[in-house]
Length: 299
Image (tube, rainbow, N blue to C red; front, side, top):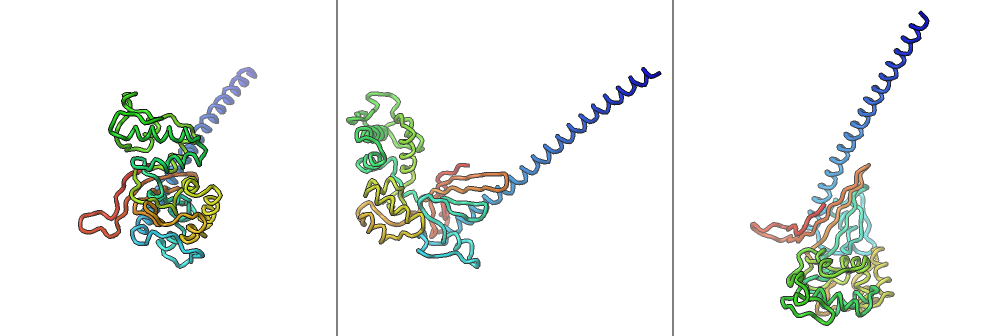
């Protein structure tokens, strides 16, 4: 009798343990589903923030002049969204907040060298002032020029289709193609990707150029000084010209173009999103001409 009771007790304990494990499994499954559901909801809310930020920025770009904020301007609580954006924006790829969860970067494409039409001497200066040896800077420049030109005759330190069948001999359509033209170090990639674009047109907007590019046209010390002022929102055209010695001249401008690279950064609860796009804005477009064209868009 006692033995049977003991067996029954063991069976009850086993069943109880199994039921407990099953209940725990169900509870964990439910918790997992709840967590996934919360993440999905947060993702949807973050997507809404991203979409809203893009529309607000586009509206501001089309309705406000593309000028740096006046020195000393401050945001008022009664400002419209467009005015609030305009009082904080810049065109040299420095992040500024749209809201607690949204940051924006804008890079004027005319502050970058066009990878298909760059002045060779300017690219050599950029590379040497960024740490490359004169020979390496010329090798990179010659190789890119050989990649672009229509002939098959290599430059002094270049590489053309006469020497290799893999040379394009045509325009670069995606900036990453420079890595097919030649092998680059990480430092060289950083310099080139930060200063070259397939979308830049016209004169170089030196006011929104990188510190490295400004240094190549003045000096590292001058570039460091003006970019620090720029980051603090304390730089105007007159001061820039005075401190760097760079004046109005052929090929140089001090204002933004209508081709802009934009990065939207969303950090909402447990979700982080980003969207990159390059657009050409035409605020005064008429008839069937769109007010802006998306030249590139990536998530």
